[in-house]
Length: 339
Image (tube, rainbow, N blue to C red; front, side):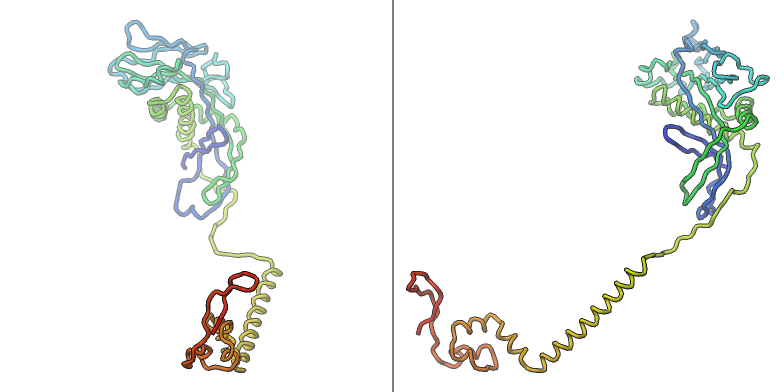
């Protein structure tokens, strides 16, 4: 039994869910529960909020059935005053004897951050009033709350389905009446408005107040609910798997085997060439000294030798040809030899 939040587009839902237990971390499931979405709009100017002459509070008289004084005198604490209505007109606040709809409507005046003057940015907002006795932030809001039957699916800790259907009158009245009669969650509403009011504008305070109301109303009423089994569930395990088509896999294995056979054939061919005794000499004749001897030595380069050095006449104490640039009959300079 835990209240969580879920955001879909620009709407924030509070919903009742399972507690975050370690044994549920590897379980994916679909469950049925309840959710609340609340939306608020600042109406401070519509409520004609002003200060009493003695300066102990701000009076308000809204165009709906909601009027009174938000006290800001020395010794007063942060507070929230609320009223509930039978419909969107706000002309009937007797929800004890009159039926309510879904969504249902409510209004609130919050006095928060007592002894702390509002920020300059907040004071520039006409929907925020600052207290004159040491400072406070005062705001009036008009809100509606919609109660939903919810079915949601969680896979690997992430919501993959979030299907809402408007709840019936019984569930709606249960949430509205529990919070309205007990006021046990007012402290949460005050805290939410206080935090948002430190540096926020009227709409941000209203949005935070609405989300806090959704969470609070659902949490306070949750004592009337009882746990039920999940609609469906499965144990999730992680294993390393791979899936490839058979034809490409077989072709890859066959080509690797043929490559191995080709390697064996080339190795045997190379071994036979070495056994004939010609490979070593051909390799030696491809060296740079041997290529030089081929171009500038004419006698010894054509006979078999034991070493590359034996191709040069100087190796045998004979005076070899000199190498240098000579001019051809055509007038070009080329490498050539002379005695």
